[in-house]
Image (tube, rainbow, N blue to C red; front, side, top):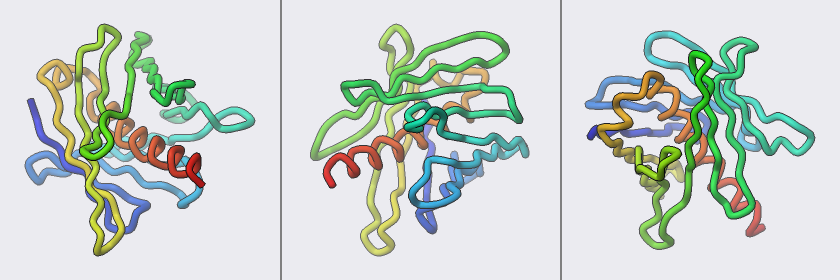
Length: 166
């Protein structure tokens, strides 16, 4: 089990750390778009782009190669598909709770891999996230990309729910 933290200084950029060591960054291009750049601490950079007419499917790309896709289904869960090293895997990202809200990432068998707890900093109106991962998650080959994408899913979910209320 491991603890990660994601902090935002300007609501467009999140830094993800583990034991105060930088794991990576998630940077959005603007407030109203889901386009983003993911930068892993080893220097690799990935693009996150909405696809399709309505932009309901989000893709993570390494250059032109799609490594991961996610989309929200009819009941508010986000279906995540990865294509690392030619191997397709599926995950489910879902919201849990109302007053003590959190997000959970599970594998295809329903095993919890990650719990993400958002915290709103009222002074700056920015979100911070506490992310707890399981031992099974820590063995994933591309765990940094999955972690930062899960953070993007949490932001995506909150944006979609806020838009539904308006």
